[in-house]
Each structure stands twice: as C-alpha cells, then as structure tokens.
Image 1: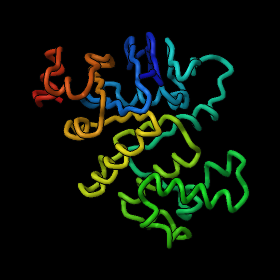
Image 2 (image 1 turned 90 degrees about the vertical axis):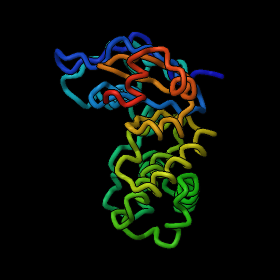
Image 3 (image 1 turned 90 degrees about the horizontal axis):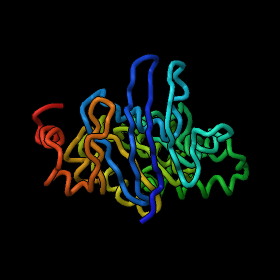
Image 4 (image 1 turned 120 degrees about the vertical axis):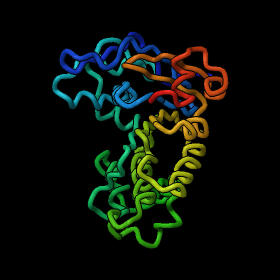
Length: 251
C-alpha cells in the first residue's frame, strides 16, 4: 500500500503566529483520510498546504516538505497550476460559477486546452456520472448551476473538480451545509471515488469521519496528536486528548 502524500517537519506561520507545528504524516493512496479536531486547530490550514492554497495569503511562511508522488511541491520551479490540476479541492460552501451546469464542469478542461465540443461533452457526462449527479442534470445542462439545490450544487462542484482528472481530492467539510439526504449522497460518493482517488477530508462530524474514512488524524492546536486507522482510533485511541475529543468532552 503506497503513500500518495508525505509531509516532513511541516510548519506554517501566519505572520508571527504558528498555525501548524511539525506535522509529519503519510497519507495512503486510494484511501480516505479524515482530519478531525476542534475549530481553529489547523485542519483546514493543513489541507490547504497540500495544493498550496495558503500561498494566496500574504503573511504565510512555510517550512518543511510536502511530498506528492516523488516531488516536494514547495520546491522552486514547481508549476502550481499543474499541481492544482492533480490535487483538486471541494470547499465547505458549494461555489458554482454563475454559469450553466455544462460550463461549470467544462471550465477546467477548457483552460487546460480542450476545445472540441465532442470531447467536452464526453468529459461533462463522465464527470457528472462520477459525481453521481448525471441523472439529475442531464436534461438541464444549459440551466444555471445557481438554480440547483445545495446538495446538487455541491455535487456539480465535485464534478467540476473531477473534470481535470486529479489523482487527489481535498474536501473541506463538503457536507456541513447540506441536509441529511444530500449528506448521505456525498458520503456514498466519497466511498465510490476512493477506488480511483486519494481523498483527504476535513470534518467536524465524528459520525461522518467514522463512516467515510479509513484513517483519521486528530489535530489540536496545530499539532497531530494521533494518526491511526479510523476503527482503531474510535474504539481504542492511545492518547487521552483523543479520547476526550471523540467522547465529546471538548471541541
């Protein structure tokens, strides 16, 4: 079982404030790794180091290595656009573009040079099927994505991320704004997608982490306190802080 992502001595600072402290983790390929912990503990900050989204914040300074495949993504000369094609991202709040459903999903392939309508049609259909949204949108691809329900919008955003064929998908609380039925659909989708993708998901929902993930990393104050197979962490955590968080004593 190979590792898709490996971080070594990863530290991140917002100005003088340290948000990540010596994060060392190996994330396995074609598995779901959940990042859990209370608000403000560094989960989303860590997630964003994996596709260099923190680069967009002026005061950020990063030390250490993030190895994806066999390269450190923070080396000089790394093409960040190419990196973000390989490492897709789905955000907490669904954020479809104010365009048609079709144009939302075709956007990435277009900017990567795909221009033939037949090719784009195939990508849109394939991506929608992978995101379990095709049957709901196939007859309304020219309608605005903004008109869809919250759960449908989020699955269109997942289809948009899949359209450029990433091999890693980052998900930042992708179901936190959704109703239970839509949440269940997204969770079923995560289970299917890990057959072809490595998925890292931030979630506040302990039940969701238990349902969808193979491994869990418990963050507290910028540090990984415990990293373990999910089933073991939820039944036999080795650290008292993990036990207290999972049992609801804080967080």
